[in-house]
Length: 260
Length: 287
Image (cartoon, rainbow over all chains, first blue to last red; front, side, top):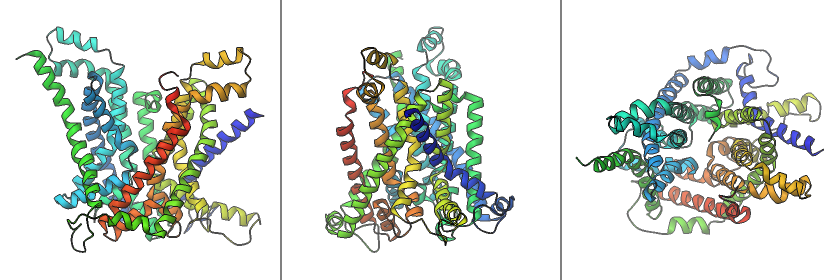
């Protein structure tokens, strides 16, 4: 009896979590004029429509480029932070770790507002401002991945390299990096995905002509109503994430992705 | 050069970039936001440098804001309770699967977690809207006569938030439950405790750190999920975070700043309540 209830709850959870995404994907392939269920037929017309709208296309491209750039930034900064935290046990190291992890739980909308006011005061232009915000938001994910692999790294290997005459930088690049790279890579992929779907800071930080895909989808939904081109845009978002996850699984293994 | 000195300066060189970035683009802007929340509203610039408490007193003396705060507390509480009631059994199930099964279950939870909130809100849009799945199914089967709009209500917002946040809860709880030493439950069994008693006296307390961290994550995310609230609640059902956004779109920066800190205050109060109720510290470091 209780085993049945357990399975029932698992079923409800899966339906609640996956249901909305499935509905979006099905709606995206509809051949109808507007949203209706069940769809009258299946077609790719809304995907073609998506790429024929300049705003959507530009937003899609911007989101991809921004996600790549922010992931590189977050992975690089996260790697540096993780090196320090994994090798120093002092109050500063604890503080640095808390500071790097803070944007993970801190309401991103409030961070976006704070950054907007700062940017307005110092006249920061839109694109670098957006990039920095994304690096800050993605940093915890990249940092945590790298830190996990650095903590399981045997530092005597590096000491061996140094006793043989390699400097600290050289021994890090030649010995540590090749061993911890799955952590760095999964951190990069995590950061990419987070940046690609990021909404709450971008809400305030996008500007005329510089809009990310999630924000474009959001404003379409708010101002142009329930168009199926939004479903196609959303389905593309899911597709990109599945591709990234597939790559991650191939490159670093599933275990590396779910251990958080 | 002294090797320990160069080692030390190298350590600093490694710590500096993250420190500088977070100081300049996390700590400083939030400090600035706090500063602005105590400044006077200005029609021409961001704010007038004239210290005032008005931004806060106006919020707390306005019955409309109290209504919004009550609503926010209510919806957050309902989301938290449902997250726990649904997430715990799911995590319990996942934690008792084989390592491979658990991996698959966690992967299934990770995908929705990565999909942008706006996409998932759109999914509910498509389900609950006038021409959506639910309305279509109910009219198709003759349960209701005309299409019904289920959006823009407490239920729609709560449902949307719940589904966005459930994966966080499940992942947090699964990791916590999977690390509980099997010997504890076996010991309870061998001492004569039934499955329910074992669960309530052993497993549940040992998983309290996972419950607390999951609930706190859900709290912070639920309070700030503006886009989901805006799409599913519409103009009719607004929460505190919508007020922050509305103040920004009317350029009342000090008000927006003050509302942000009221929101943070509420988040911290809920976090403290969670800590007091769940009491994770009683097993922290022992599980």
